[in-house]
Image (cartoon, rainbow over all chains, first blue to last red):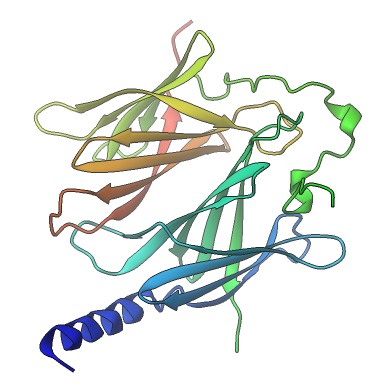
Length: 134
Length: 143
């Protein structure tokens, strides 16, 4: 491993360490939710990968994986991640996901914009998730 | 195969007849001027919303010395609490300052406007992207 590769590897380790607060399975604190039941967060090649599952009468609906488009700390001089944003485009609707850690909870806002010309209103929902115990 | 129409139950209306045509969201819950509940805020000190024609606009002022930084007025998006509601109680707005962009996302709870701001630096500086959450009360006009 040359010095550039070594530096890259160290950076990957650092990013993984910093993002590890997010990593895991997050379950909705409301078991009766009609919104999102579960979010899986993982780290791949230094990126935070978001996989969301919506409530559905038969079984949770897998929204698929997207990369978080940005990670945010609590201040300009902090490296500790506190929040992330991600975007799902379902064709008929777009959902902007904005999430932040707060006292062990992942607080997630979903800004949903319909693009299908249906009679539905664009809407916002906010849900709370706790980390699943392995 | 039927086209996808929902990602969760919340996306669906109780009845298609509930809302036969898509109506514009009512912006009145947000319209007006909102002041930060923290008089020493270092983020956004004031935010105002108005309609100009069909456009919903947001206008934020940041904490700066010796006088507030005027972020200017931008188009904003309105959101209801549910797919069936017509009350615009939530918004998002985007500012591009060149060196940084700021994505504002807000909602009203119990009369308080909660604004989350996602700040992303684009100038290659050593500053971390950062997130803030601030609280605003509505400035009542004397009647």
